[in-house]
Image (cartoon, rainbow, N blue to C red; front, side, top):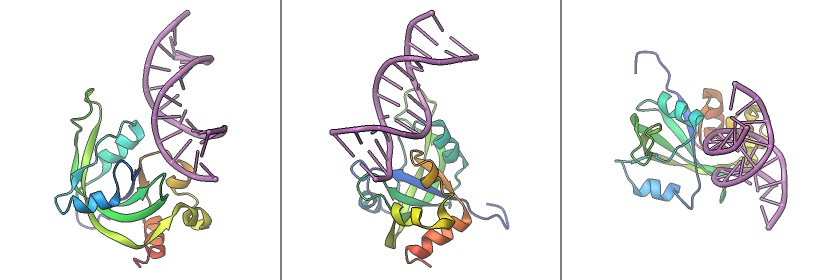
Length: 144
DNA sequence: GCCAACGTTGGC
DNA sequence: GCCAACGTTGGC
């Protein structure tokens, strides 16, 4: 990353029944590949991620809350589980859990977060998060 | 369990 | 290249 450049922030969504925060933590500092993305918008965001970027780890379905923060440890590369070769993935490792998970309900109740992709396009599995949104959610999560 | 939103597929 | 049908996601 070049001098003075701010790190981008993201949000990664997962069903805890298929991949949970606890599993991410168990994966340790080595991290794991964030595979299985099969959506072109999500792919573009994955491609824009760089090593060191941070992302919220969101549990959809059961929970519906941001539970932790992960860090990108490897930039976009081909996803071997995609036979077509069209999609790729990044590697992420768990950084830390939020002191208090921030629920979708809380996010929707906060006017300053009404532009969050999570609110407006909840189906997108890889989302950009603005610096302001990042700071607000961190504060709500006791990470201020 | 329902259904709206969205992406993908396939016939034309 | 359009669009209807279909499947999936995910909040409610």
